[in-house]
Length: 355
Image (cartoon, rainbow, N blue to C red):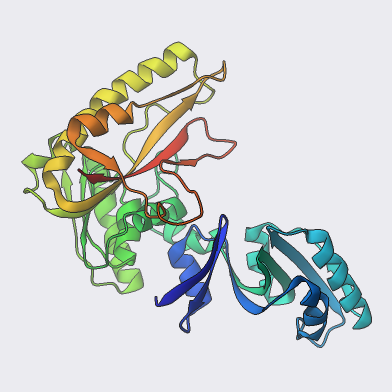
């Protein structure tokens, strides 16, 4: 996608882009919440006049539901100006705070205004919003599901995107389970290979990937082998892969927060597994390849946090953190923390490259 960044801010970017299908792009990006079209930019003293001149509302109905998202600016000023404009138009306008998944379903009859202040005001109108239900078909309609152990479709696509490699590259998931990450990689244009220690999950993964190929008419190839991720060199040659993207074993399923003793035990056991894996990953990964891996973080009943010693692993096996945003003014650091309130295991997403 051709684009030229104009303004970076912590929550996003304003860019000049070629003609795009915003709905398609937001689904491919997966982690992006909204895409808005910039309507105008102006100085502070011009804001009220410019908003009044803009044709924000195009329906013939006199009823309107609208929402406002502001960045680096005061929402009250935007809200007050819009309220007066809608009153002048004699619109029955109701402002609501809509979560992205709700807005995605109502965008056809709801106005969502974006206001960013970076030296000047940038005012936009949301044209696409992330909709988790869009991923439901790829999840619920495939032959096999294991919700208790698998990554969500959305997270799988984000992990694939974080690899920063080009389509037609070859990607490996050495803990592939039923193929969730691999299917998103194939849909992104990658040829994929998977390794799975369970014979039953190998069969399920093959069935799921065959379904994806048929359902979406894609030509990307896949190969699933039964095998041990700590012995990659037994199954694949040196420098076989442009990227390794995986959510490995994260420990036992937890129904409640662990004690400190339990967290230490789990981390020590996983530390041994991951060190063996990274020793083999160095062999099969290309010199300029990337590893995107989910590492568990355990918050205990006493609120202490335990995780894997990744610094030890990186130093021992010759990896360093790769941060695609390092030179940008948005201050994002790696690893990325991903957690939900209902998660008993927090996830740290590492992006690594060989030294």
